[in-house]
Each structure stands twice: as C-alpha cells, then as structure tokens.
Length: 295
Image (cartoon, rainbow, N blue to C red; front, side, top):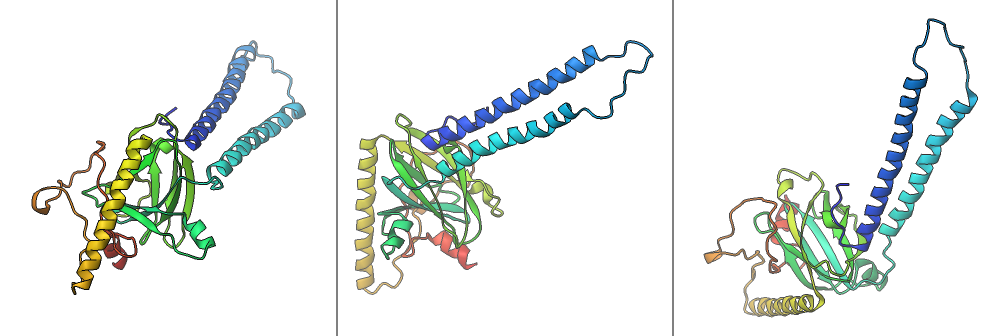
C-alpha cells in the first residue's frame, strides 16, 4: 500500500496500522457501493404512481449517525495506542545519537548517553565521535542490526524534519526544542537506505540528503572503533596546534578528491557509499551549521 518494507519494529507497527486503515476503508466503501447498487436495482422507477412518502426513518437516521462515530472511535483508539508506543523511550538504548539538522545538511553525534539521561545526572552528554555533511558531500548514519537506537533531534536555524522512509516514521527537528524517539532495528536488515529532510526548510531543502547504512554487529563494532580512534587522534592534533600557538586549527569538512576538490554538485537518488565522519567544532556543530546559524 505504498509503504516501504520497515526495517524497525516500530515501522512494522506503523505498517500494520496503515494496512488496517485500508481494510476499514474498503469495508465502508463496499457497504456504501452495495447500498447504492441495491437502491438502483430494487428502487428503480416501475410506473407513474408516486411511491409512499416517508418524512422520517428513525432507524436509518440513527444508523448513519452512530456508525461513523463507531468507525472514528475505533480508528482513534488504534492510532492513539500506536502513537504512544512509537514515542516511548523507556527501553534502554544500545546507541545514542544526536541528530543536528542545519541549512543545508546533517550532523550525527554519537553520544555516550542520551540528553535526557545526562540532564538527570546534571551533566552534558559526551560525544564519542561525529559524522557531518554538506549538500555536496552527504553524510552517512551508521547503525547496527538488532540495536535499540535513541535519537535526540535539534537544529541551530530553522525547522527541519528527520525522515528515513524505511523507518516508516519521521519527526520534526525544531530550534530550541529537542525532540526524541527510539527505534529497534530488526535483524537481517543490513544494507543502505535513503534519508532526507521532509520539511520545506528553505531554498536548498531538496539537497538535505543523507544515507543510512545498517551493518552487521561485527562490521559495526569495527567501524565504531575506527571512528573513535580518528576522533581521538584529531583531538590530540588540535591540542598540539593550540599549544603551539595556532589560534584556528581548522574545523572545515574534508571533501574527497585530489587537492581538496569535492564531488560535483549533483543531487540524485542514488545510494552513496558510507562516508567518513567529518570534524566538528567544540559545540558539536559543523562549520556549515555555525555559518548559517550566524546569518
């Protein structure tokens, strides 16, 4: 019915609700079409004699008043039940990720703990490493099969929307208002998936693309170890530069290509390979995000 195959348990719940709504719609449609056909066949004009005129039919009027209320109440119950489950963050997460949506790309900060947990402890969440992108160099969000993943969503400029169609779910990324949700990635879903902004956020909204890559546990653990080693090395180099008196050690995003040349500015729906994490500034917001927020 138009929904991609979900790769999360929460997405499967959305799919079930969607299909159930279609079943209810078809049931109502068949009933209405049946009554129309029945009326056309059995109440067609047979003579010039005027049929008996009935001003009120209380059973029929009660039926078409009560029946829509019952249908809406049933749909509302299942929708409210599933929405509560989709927004639940009670299960202990295996991975915590802060999603920063900025004009015109994304940054994914892999955290030691969620923002809510850090706030309860009266501290700031610690970043293990970050992956940042630009419109020309889309970032890659990497997850592990079977993980419960907690997302904290924030933006330094305008409202964006974090959407992965394979999740069958999206949520707004709002400045000064952190949103959060969790998903459990299903086993056997390793692969590459599309992600994008689903909120018209400005002139380059269509370029706010990213890639989701789901890895098997062994591959994911090796990737995380590599990113943490690179982040630690970068911190050491930055500290050495500061000690040597370099005021601006540089926070730009390294683009692929010879002599710093990046890929062509071309937007397609093709799935790119997983990208390396780009460095971020001390506030965990990439240079591109900081510039746009300043404007």
